[in-house]
Amino acid sequence: MSRTRTAPSKPNRTSGHPSGDERYKAIDLTMKRFKFRKDVLLEVLNTAQETFGFLSEDLLIYVSRQLDVSLVKVYGVATFYHMFTFNPLGEHNTIVCTGTACHVKGADKIVERIAEAYDIEPGETTPDGLLSLTIARCIGSCGLAPVAVFDGKVMGKETSEGMLTHIRDIIAASEEKIPEGSGA
Ligand code: FES
Image (cartoon, rainbow, N blue to C red; front, side):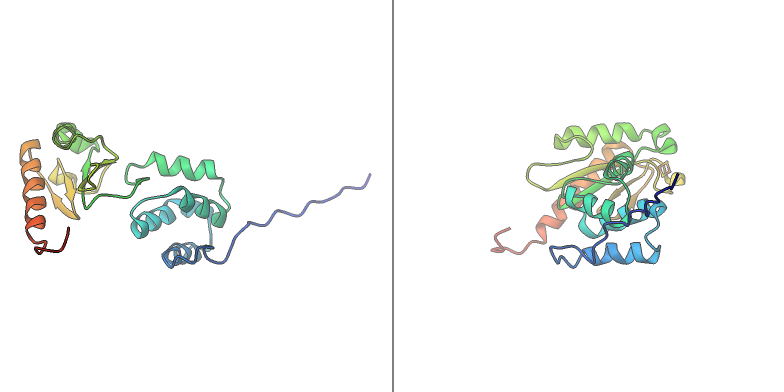
């Protein structure tokens, strides 16, 4: 009996995103650097999050296609890690670490307090687009627990009230800097 051999299917990879959006080049570069290995999915999603600020469905489909990894797997990894967001972030962004060290030192209270003050849940942005609240598992600064990162600035060893005061002060200061008549 003769056996027919089926050739392994080739990934349906395209050269760049059809939209021509230049930001996809950063993702392509990361994939190329790792020779399109499937096990660098997390690294690629990181680049995508950094470049676009959030992971849109289109972005996840693109990564799935280019790496030849199922969309289900891409979604699975993206939703497992709290550092990924699926909606555009607000003007200001707070990431509260809820890893073990931070949890023990009261991170949950900080999340609760910010959520209550701005009426949003983790992963959400205020309707006016002013503030996003994100949670992370461990951001590698456990000695400063509890830790939050606000607009890229690390804040450690804070109480929930102290953290909230910092956030309010920074937001107020940035609003004062907006020149009059800018329409903002
Ligand atoms: S657990 Fe929060 S920084 Fe490590």
